[in-house]
Image 1 (cartoon, rainbow over the protein chains, first blue to last red):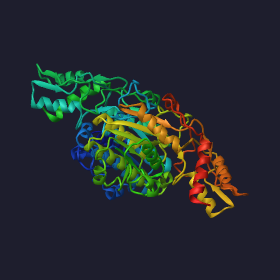
Image 2: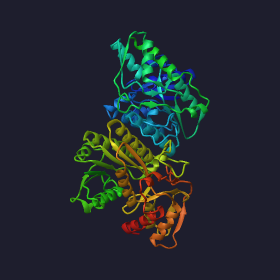
Image 3: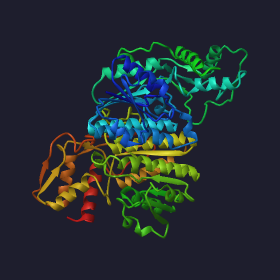
Image 4: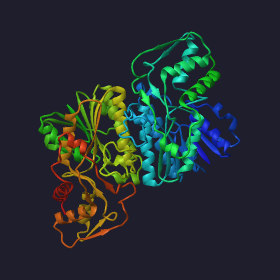
Length: 312
Length: 312
């Protein structure tokens, strides 16, 4: 039995799809704060069970560990920008939730954990592309801090109590069912004003994007490739796309004409936004895994599918 | 006004001594869980105030920020081994306490924080001596995890809200008033049995030790040398001493004859103990700072002073 925390969320629900397609049994635990039942509705009752609970409820979480062999811990606050206004969400839904997951695993004899970390742990770095060995990791967002704190808890549990762990440092993951992020924001802006698209920052931010199908395939490939201690991998594509190019792609996908793309200026969208992220994916390559879509292809597919889901 | 969290503790009280000797005003906040009033008693009322409160009490902590320009955040659970038995102490007294310190600073407009991190953030590494740029940092103790989590919170606060931070990754710090650690343990063992000294592990563990006076001088030197963003420095000596040599030094300092030193075996004292730590202190050197005592000299001074304090 696989337990997927945040399994009704954006990436979690795609992971559930993939596990089901491989014939695996899955239990989802999700508080539905950003996840949606309809993302996994088709599977429920068949090979998927769902527990609607918050990871801060350690009793419900502990009950959900019954019969589990591997935990895929994806639940987290997905909105990086929130930390600029509310400072305890990432602490609670990131760090403390991860502590609860690990403690429930320990008490129930569950020893395998796959964790969705983030390129945000690197903070603002000079070394591009950035390898896993980059240090010191000094995140500049509260979200990034909670991911690094969670990594360190997982590593400590493995070192002290003997868990096996896979840590995936994600690029920006995009695709159908996205519930946040720049493409999602742009589409909502075009819904409210079909003539103007306001872009936070100067548009020169450059980041790696990865399609969510590639992401869940990559996660499972990494899990299958290593089976002891703590395996840590960057998970992304080998190139980047700029925010201004994303704005163009979203406008193209919308079919709208004469959209005025306006920039608020400044080198980043908000305090804590990392202007450039480009992950070195050499370690992932060496496992024989390659993403099928480039950053730009992933962004385009995401824009088209979200416009389809959300409507304009 | 300087605020020293854990200022009645081992390293904290030495920092208070040093700040007072420089003519600074100091407020101490300490829950006295391992700190002791008598460590700073001589200063109280003169240039030092004490607030007896836990950092989990955010109201008391916030009140203690009044008039503060620099926070020296040293409070933490000092017993690394505790995490093998009680898993939430480092989370609460480390990570969540640091969150509370940062949040209280933010709400009170306090922008400078000096933080006592640890070589434990590195985990079990091949690269010796270990530079600050070593990555990925995968701690194997819950204590190390809480230190890395705290570093990441500080870095995120600096990146998001604009704090200035100094992070000191400590070697093993030893000296008078020590309240835990291998030398302290050995002395207590000799008190209960003057003929046998049991050593956890095979005695081959090799670590850098630093005298507590050198440590507080180093911390203040680092603070004086940098004044923007996040400055991160290893703080230790440039060599190591083995646990078996420490056992010999403690026995010599005790004056006891014919002590039988016995080893429990295994490469480490307990799960989560890092067998070898040796910090690269090149960055600290480049600031013009040098420790006055070597690892072995620090261990000897500590053994002599603790035997004097504790008695045999």
